[in-house]
Length: 405
Image (cartoon, rainbow, N blue to C red; front, side, top):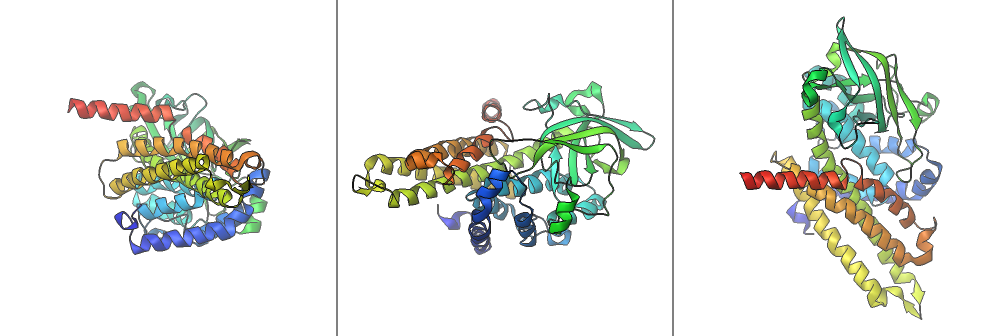
């Protein structure tokens, strides 16, 4: 891809910085954290120090003051090495922080965003429930107004950072008779689950944040991939939430989180593309050193065709993803383009990681090479932020509206 099409010198400098950090500090430890399932606090702390947990936010709120393109470059470069680190940045920034930046009051921004943008604490987004996955409008968590505050009851499922995070944006039904127009969103705070560990590392906890009684993390999920990313339930048991923690207006929660998900789809497209490209680079290098029948396997046409197809589709994915990001950055409609990019890149991640294993042969099926981990990490990309089926539904509805217009 022609770098000048989307990137300035600042973007290229960001790419080189993130790439160098990922290759030197994350690549050596990625397999170990994947195997243990432990959250990689030391490298997450380093990402905060480098500004990677607040890339697109203004400096006045503790951010790096860069733009959306730089943010997508960051997610993409991290995912080429480790999807767990990449989703940590993506979920924290897009899902945990952006709703406060976009829909919060100035007081809410001043209170919460500097903690998030600097990586002092991690954030998350409580939307998915046991009965509300693709049907996000099926939210069952309730928020009842009582004596100047809201009382929340319910459970959220598969929430990134539910355990390690301290600031969350969550959705709840404030008016059951209004359907999706009766869903509102709130800012909730709690302690990280392992305070001894975060105090040891020196990041992840802020003692000044109010801890809401009855708000806690549930069991940690034992996942196929993204194993170094923290995923748990969020549980609300008569949680008294101050009225000033309402995010936006009552009844706007559904509309606002749909906007958040649109942007999140570009981020997941960038992560997926990183997996697709990272596994391709592993396969390309392997094909140059692995010998069979007296020559490098990269000299065989069967392998060359696989590599050519992988490279071609990566180039297509880059244009789809960065085009959607460019539209969003310039405040143009991007919902359809985000869905297209997410659909294409997530399915490409699955295809390319499988092909990379095939090129590695039996070695690719072992944990001695990163392509095995990359394949496991790729599968969730076709599920999270809206399944492939939901993306096709979103795209089709846009096409039908365009035809009607």
